[in-house]
Length: 149
Length: 109
Image 1 (tube, chains in turn cyan, brown):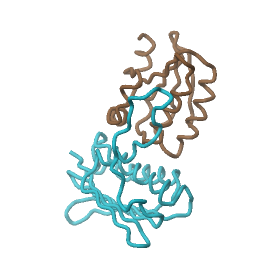
Image 2 (image 1 turned 90 degrees about the vertical axis):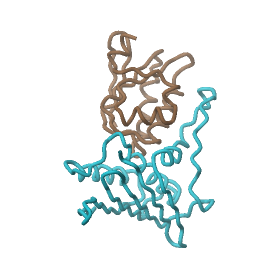
Image 3 (image 1 turned 90 degrees about the horizontal axis):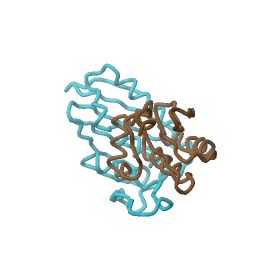
Image 4 (image 1 turned 45 degrees about the horizontal axis):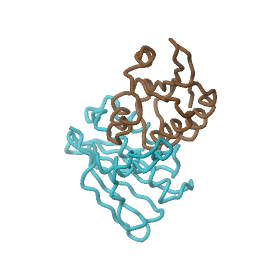
């Protein structure tokens, strides 16, 4: 994990992780530790960490089909009013060539039928902007930004 | 992932002794909840006051745990911190669970 302050005052963090839920957790915990005491640390209620976690979990689960040994690159630029993020992986492309629309789940069902998943893209889309996905034959690149204030 | 149980003021409280319920521990959480809920008490309160991060896998695991309750039984939540509360509100799961400000408040409810 590398971090540096850019000329415009923004805080850049770059990380590489393995395609496991454990490494995703370790990376997020590490980023939080780096941000402690930084003036660019986003407010907790922006839920920036949730957006990053959901995208990374999807890469582990779908692009790499829950197999360890895949590389995931993460580049974060923390500015005062927004966090810009770029995710790169070398796994399977998104099935339809675009990220899911993230419709809200249907809760008007019996308890037994309540959904235990399918919240991820709804949360990502609700909390982020300027989502852009590109597959170039070898890698998937997803960019998005998260308003912080 | 450590969960501890306690019987206070007539209520069975399950405390999550962890800061995160995420994809890395969702399965462990479900397994541990299955063990505890197997005691078949009619009402449990899940105290989340130490949890400051939950992702959709963690949310799904809590929903899965609720489905393990016997018919007529209740799994209620208490002590949601702001980031956790926001996930429940955004997904409208706050309409599915009874949510108390704290385990103490749940005991007197």
